[in-house]
Image (cartoon, rainbow, N blue to C red; front, side):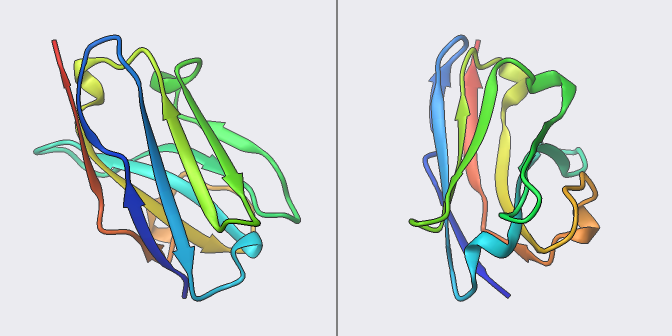
Length: 125
């Protein structure tokens, strides 16, 4: 399985922006479906955004971030990014990068076999 390391979290005021990055190693990155999940205190980990692998391109976003977040990948650099704009206090959570080899893009966290350690995003009001 691929190993994942996230970066780019931090503290930002409401309305601000952050970019999260996830760097993969140990696998053929272009063959992995990549996704971002988040987990707020006391809540379950939820799907945020996903992007397909080279054989099945496409993106998906949870409704609450559509129009504000953009997921992208650079297969040459083994990275997936999440550009987050117009941040809201309810976006506060630990954000996790996840990878799934082949197959379709899915929102189900149980389908992803590789996870990063998470990066904290805090949005102040």
